[in-house]
Image (tube, rainbow, N blue to C red; front, side):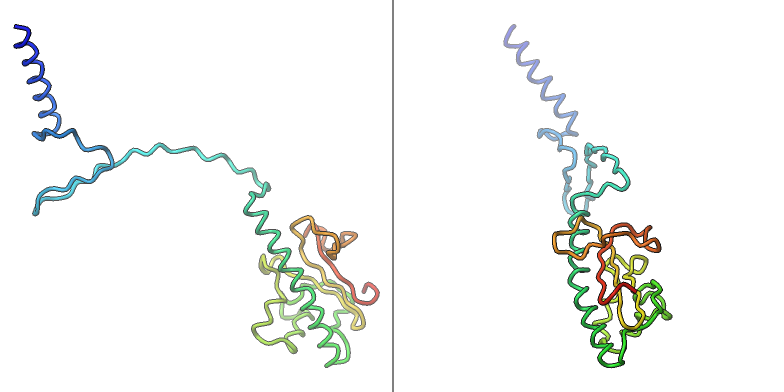
Length: 190
């Protein structure tokens, strides 16, 4: 009798598995698996329920490590372009007798066609004109002031800067909203 009961339990378990698997004796396919039928039948994909993590809210103004690295890379690019701008200004002065003169007014280097810094295009090749623009784009351009004999160039500074970098000692009121700046003056301040 015990054997008959045990045999009945096994048969019942087989029937339950058989019913649960649609006649297959194998266990049901796990979620996310592909079920491939015989030729001429359709393939059924069972969707996987993937647990999702709620992303931590990003605090505005808090740079992520990658954005800090990007900012430092842009600062390095600005510092590489500064001597190129100076060499371009020197070449312009040598060729035309003075630096592009905007009467000491602060302008973007060449964001607008009326900016005197655009005159530097006369001594730059087309592929070199990129040194007139900031790596962040037009709204963050470089700034320039000159009376023809001396000039100052200002550039956005996103990072802390390093010893020896041309960090502006004071914020120029006209550029106060731009934040920290690199700057260099050749001759007395315009």
